[in-house]
Image 1 (cartoon, rainbow, N blue to C red):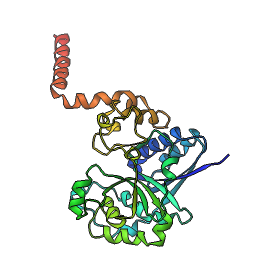
Image 2 (image 1 turned 180 degrees about the horizontal axis):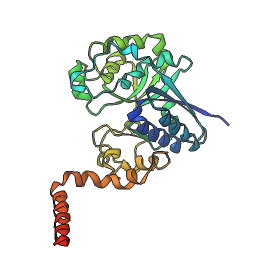
Image 3 (image 1 turned 90 degrees about the horizontal axis):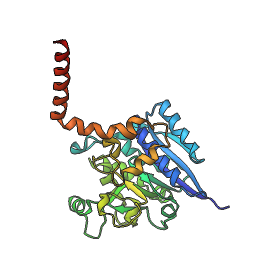
Image 4 (image 1 turned 90 degrees about the vertical axis):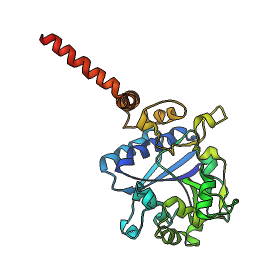
Length: 293
């Protein structure tokens, strides 16, 4: 029986370990029986307890999970863009993939807020001959093209899902070039777009769906759902549109609990409705006073 070897890389710190776990769970649940998955996690001080939980995901489907420690000294000259100070250092860790994984020729990097609904084999087997990566156009492509001075035919891609030709990265010294560009103040996505410009294969956006569910015309969900905005399912708890795919994956992880699956969705509504809160407090106060009288 032929196996489909698929290498997947995620980068996260302790705060994103749960999201990485849910993302991995979705990939394992959606995998074909012949998919031979190896996950490489770029480790930015993930606690051992969280690592153990991630390793428990092997129960869903047998796979390999490797935690790779990144030397943070390599990033000491990095200048995070002022308007994007929210970026975690781990977002830049992927720059080190060519030197960290010297025996790996191709790897699929995905952000932690990406959920899979289909096997990754088709995308992973994209022909990268002579190309550095396979990418998907960013939703703000035109805007960022102008900002970076790209020509209309020079695609600006979203770096949350990128199939990387690590062999060619090493041959062309891409790792060094990425550090040189990022040290000029560009964020991780801009740096990748600048260095990889005109050297990528653009694939179907179902492999990195960044739009709203109502804009997706097919009956089945995209193959990779990327929650790019601040409206995250794990923050709102709402199970509308494609958010439900996140909760399906969460259900098979050690992080699954009643609060995240059911209660969380009501809290943002209550939090925003101050009148409701004041009404409840007034009712409690009146009831206590009435009893005391």
